[in-house]
Length: 97
Image 1 (spheres, one colour):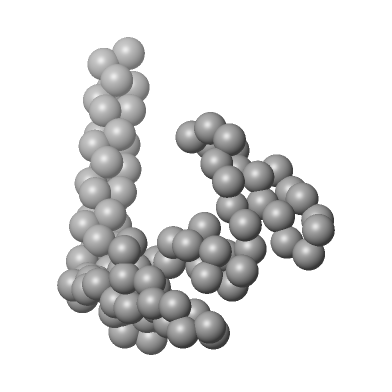
Image 2 (cartoon, rainbow, N blue to C red; image 1 turned 180 degrees about the vertical axis):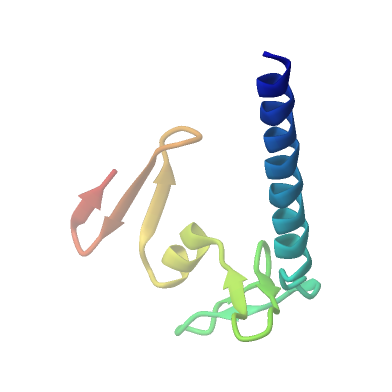
């Protein structure tokens, strides 16, 4: 019984060490994102949006966060908020909720 317990405990410790080394190595190889900065979005009709426009620079994967409802408004789409989670969107006499 004592041998079995010692063997199980040793196996558990060995697996724990292997998983720990793997997680440490995996986290070290992750790419650290470069700082983000605010940007300006210019819509087709010349409207400029600066609020909530954030550009993220990461090597080989740069992207931007854009305020979707403001972009829709800039394109001439009507957006009316019904409550904090639901919006009524109207475009070309079509309505979407």
